[in-house]
Length: 508
Ligand SMILES: Cc1cc2nc3c(=O)[nH]c(=O)nc-3n(C[C@H](O)[C@H](O)[C@H](O)COP(=O)(O)OP(=O)(O)OC[C@H]3O[C@@H](n4cnc5c(N)ncnc54)[C@H](O)[C@@H]3O)c2cc1C
Image (spheres, rainbow, N blue to C red):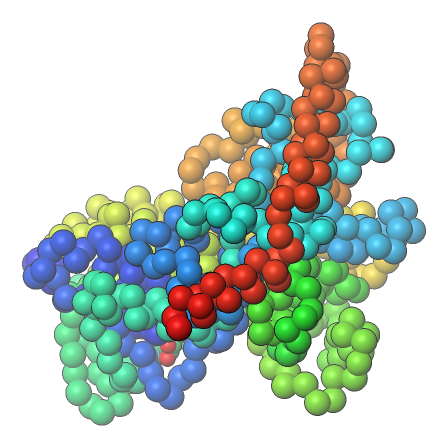
């Protein structure tokens, strides 16, 4: 049977991301109709403010202008993540930090890691990126003259999640003619072969589609009905809860061009600056911290009582569906899986898998069997590696000051791939050939910044002729480039203010 009617269930950022990806790919066939269905009674999760640079490519593909994004979604730029307090305070000081910047630690493409290992006691690894000094100085990644989606250094965005969904929704409806309706699905009917036949709404109306995309968040209404098993990964990632709040900011406050991730006794706190407010989240392991300890620790971070804050507790289900694609249904976003928000992996995996679906979209229901096998293998591999990368942050820390850190750093529950890689990286630094496929969405450069940001112990190699001189020159060039950028780039807040003023002038 030909696939003509496609339903996307869920109007959170995953649903609208899927609508744009499918719209961009399928709208060239006018006989295909995409409908997004969301419930007025079931709210979206409303968190998810940090992204990674890949989002720029995606938004360009959707045809969304960077100026629209910046002005409509309270955007600030993100040049990476600053990890504070992830190391032992006794050994590295109370203010210890490192960066995972959005750049390469190979200056001019040259591998300086062998040299860096010989200098590790005196040279912070983060300094292999220009972003270290640019971000520390709160500079914008873009010049005023930089073109759309490009800058002097690479970047992604922080945004207001609700406004981002609205922008995606408007784009999908206007540009790709995606239909939109409000209904609450009460029942999911199956065909005799176990595929989905129809949706029954609370109005009792029944509606049939040929293909379904489950973006219904943690409820995962379609995947649950299809009884697709959920692979629980809570033994690898111990954090399972978040306390979320928003703080207003004033117009004159500086805006940091990075996500600040500050570790605490049983997890970490995200601190994301937008133009209008700060988004904060206290991520923790409920097995290691009581509610009162959470409040005390969060309040000490904020420097004030939590009494009047609009706090929201979000339980987190860590793991993913064994199958991303079952019969005539695919799951995306939280319905597909989730690993706590460190490194902003959720929108990234949604984006990645929605694109995979769009590129492999079946023409007939018979195609599903062939295509699903490939896509399921790819998405399962992606999730496993994303979980490895998150677990790495906790595992390689040298903190041993609380039960949580002792449990994380002695956690034997990890994938064989991560175990093998960590053993190899004790012998020599990571290299690109350690990563097997394009489904390793975090690759050698990401691993290098995290491992050596936390001084992972790798055996020193013998330096080749001229290797030390060449490496040290290249690292000096990174520093010179940073100094140059510090002179030329505007402060982040000033850049955003100038854009705002320009647009206001143009509107007059
Ligand atoms: C604490 C926390 C912090 C996070 N931070 C980040 C971050 O910094 N970066 C990042 O990339 N991601 C982050 N995420 C993940 C991010 O929030 C999600 O990827 C994103 O919001 C997408 O959610 P969603 O669309 O899958 O689900 P939701 O936003 O929950 O949307 C679900 C939709 O399904 C609909 N629905 C549900 N049931 C039915 C039904 N029966 N009938 C009809 N409709 C139904 C609802 O109406 C809603 O529209 C975070 C998540 C958490 C929990």
